[in-house]
Length: 451
Image: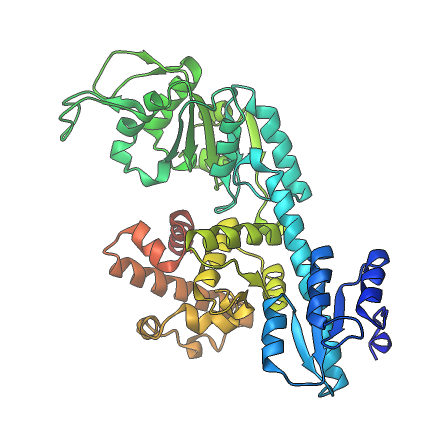
């Protein structure tokens, strides 16, 4: 019956013959009867598991003995069938599922082995060709002192690359200071980066060292460098050229030994064109450039990252390590992750929290249709329903593409305006409510304003 379904099948008469068979063959699944001529089926199960931990077992018995079934499952059997079988299809289905389960386990084991081999790159995960090129660049620039510009979409892991460069450099034992330039109020940027003296501005009651001094002999990572105000850009250029800083309110020059790594998810050439970013600073930052690929171009890395995040959140939440169902694997591979690695990480955390069994199903993932209602509780659904309605009738006279564009723009207008109202104008809080990072939320606002 199994051979007719395209499976390669071998059969033996007793337990010892099964052990001999296993010494020369590598099956995926073993169907073992509870009653054998020379030993109990559970005894054979134990012996086979010692030799082949990855082998999947389906136990069979003519007696619907619940205790025996429990014992078999406790010892690691994948499934339990009673004879006579309910249907041939049920047997074929059980064998197929067991074989697929084994393949998933072996894949997870290989992923774990590959993860261990990448420890020197910190938390950067992936073995795709594009990531191999990134690792090569990290190795190449780590020993140098040159400034590095890291480019990539939001959520691709730019800070992780910066940390890996630092950890593999001669400065590894010194400070690594990450700075999100977009998160600092414009009026405080220079003070944060270069420090200030007492009385330099209202509220400056004591002198304070800036982040460049904090990073002395180490590395400073300037994330979202494109959002740095022009006045601070001038001072940063001086620091890069001469190694000098001046605290706000002081004429005294201080020298710092700091390696600068910068990152951006925007096109700096566009900012240069509109006058919001200095061309000379761009050339000074862009000595060496590392471009991170989006996750949608790293298809073979998705499952490796997933395995890593499942382990991470299971350990953090002190929960048993969960396995991925075939449907969940298919859903993960089919999704393009516009939020990149960060979105995948959040999706797996969501799934680990919500999964009620030892398995993560497709319905546990927040981007699948099945989980849409779970991702938005009833109270939030009611709240979203309160947004102004977009009437399709207004666009019925337009061609489909133009009607869709206008409706989507109208949705962006209503949605972002409502979130900003609820967040009292706080951009970061509105972005958090939308499930987006601040830069992506701001990009939607700009598109709306120029729209």
